[in-house]
Image (cartoon, rainbow over all chains, first blue to last red; front, side, top):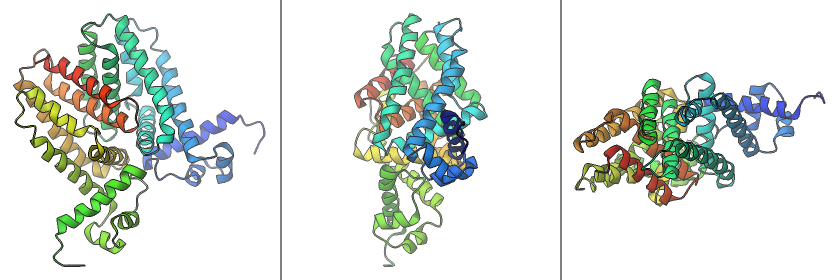
Length: 191
Length: 191
């Protein structure tokens, strides 16, 4: 393989192949061999960049999280804490092709992590960070009469649940967005 | 095989084996052969009762839903709509070994359904029924200032999200229950 190929870039290329497979087949049945075929490289090449499937899955989830974070930074100039939180959460919901692919990775990863305690740690850190951000924004908005930490747990659960239900097409996208807005009204007090 | 064995009973026995596998391995990688081994029967026996894996998974999910419904009926004598809704939703959250097993089936089924549009229909019916029940209870409680249909979408998403996050141990059970109660306060107006 060309020695100049950037290590991270190559790993991202393989993680993208995994992402596409996750969207069509789920993750539990996916092998390194299938990822190699999807990426158009040899199995040995995949093994060079990822020693195990768990390592590749953890990397793919981190990559998705980084991309969501990068898109969310565009929201940082939003006028109010509520608009900021809403903008970030809309980046998580599967509302276009990119976010649907990411949503499939997230859901497949959760289903996988539920039976693999060893890889739950990375998930916990990411979700705790997200809840801390939401609780902070609620306090910045002067939300009163609610426990901001519990509200952050509830809001993240609601968004994860909406995303998961949208992926299996349980209701229309506009209903998911309306349900999120109704919930933001309740916890931000219409601020 | 003995001709007197009840068809439904045998299917439940096999679905129970699938449930146990879902809790330890997820569902996407599970084969009819593994279910047969887990249930201690032949692969031919499994094929006699379920023609396809999708058919067995749909049956297993229906069985889990029936059991949750049966447990929920004990809540029907609850004093208020809020207590009734709370009692039913607590039957869905993975708060003991039985409900954790059911939660794994639900999560694995959702991850599977997300990439198998053909089996999303059964899921849609069940979840629409549950949301209708919640919206009705909100109206019965005289909840005002909220759209009860949107609040029902939000509450079911929140509970599915909490359940999914509990399965991967993202926070403590008591925090999940407290977040649910805080949310019920908001939509039932502390009624």
